[in-house]
Length: 615
Image 1 (cartoon, rainbow, N blue to C red):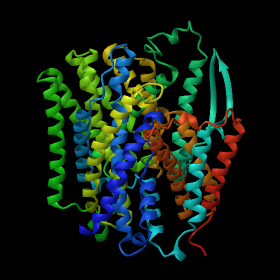
Image 2 (tube, rainbow, N blue to C red):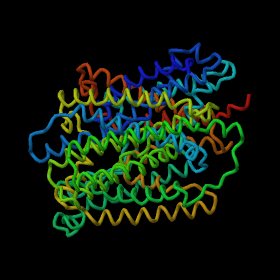
Image 3 (spheres, rainbow, N blue to C red):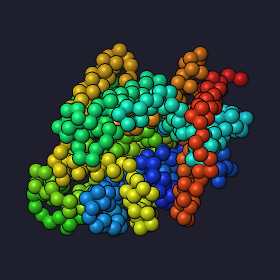
Image 4 (cartoon, rainbow, N blue to C red):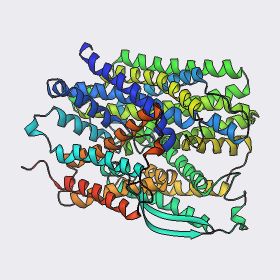
């Protein structure tokens, strides 16, 4: 373990830096990127000689595990913690401050629970042939390229480094206004509402698409089209239409986008339940016995399994101790405790599945928390706790559950990278839990600073995910008023997606129901951007019908470059820089976005077209 001291120490420093600085960016954008490729790049750049020497692969893997763990806490906290401030602000009440110690305690509890569950189920997750782990393959390709002799490496300048620059430049240019953020293919004004179908200039999304298979990307895009179609249809409804009454499409204060979120959340619920049924063995995995070397990589010692179980127990004890000390012992606290324990166990498994299915950058963690929040609100309704003060109890429980899901999301991908690199997965457990512990302290502190400076849920820090959960809590718990028709429609779409997956599986195809649910649940631009990346890659790979090293490195570079630019901005914002000051240009024509998209697409195409196995 002594040989891992340096990479783990470096990873902890990186995770403190990244998890803290991405708090601001995440609160603004409502999404956090997968940063494992960025951590690998930083470790490779700073320790090039160590990475190229003996044990270089292990060094980079350990740095990656520790360095990306804190980001799981960032996503878990910023998606849910602002609900308190947003709900109180919407109700016109005095907004309570961020409860620092509660967030630290619940973040740590969630980290221990997520870490323990994924560790215990490591083998089952990592041998599942239906989970392609696209970002883990990208990370493994980066690590393998770093440790190879220079003459044996893929063309790094034209792939990874060119994409790194392109991702950062495209992101910076859109923020400066030099390039439009999207190209409008279709635009229409209906009843004073502007509707448009746009192709986004987003290096992160296009890079994610470059890692996914075309069928998966098409499913995500199909979900996005369903979402856009629903928004288009609602925009044509007249104000006096019966469909705009609360009984059908709207809750108090809800907008069209939020209505489609309800439909997407219901679709996600069905896909979640189906994924859990598969995972827990009602549908047995059909796989060949593992080779001895592979089995050794995935084996978790009995003593380590005891520690992982202890981690879960300690996390649960911390969570329950906080709950009962805050809410007392009664029907409300007992129902809440039972609900959060069940949901935490189920959703952590799902978080790991999602990461290995479509990658952590595109993983709809908020969809799993949508289901958890729904269950907590129902428990509170049963107990008769429907006052705004009850949000102060439910929100920290949501934070703990969300951190657990995000920890599972990150660790499963990191462990898969270790497996692909031929390293024993158990060796990464210490780095993972240490990184989570650092994030559990750093992220709440930065959130407190951000709230004091700008206010959570304000125009400066809109916290889009927090607003979505706040709408759910307000509509279901405080007002008992839900848009049932979108929910019923979403449940039907979820059932169709499950039937499609089952039918495709019988024909040897993988069409995951979760991919369609992701497209409906997340903003439509995400599905469109992902499809663009997949199409550019597919067009080039048609001749050799497999993904090349340069293709993977290009996609990883785009994701890393975009994340790196956001990191730099996050650091400057912490020191008082206002992001809107970057807007040096105004009203860039839509065509400039198309130029940027084609430029990134050409980079993906050229590198995907090259078969690096040939001289």
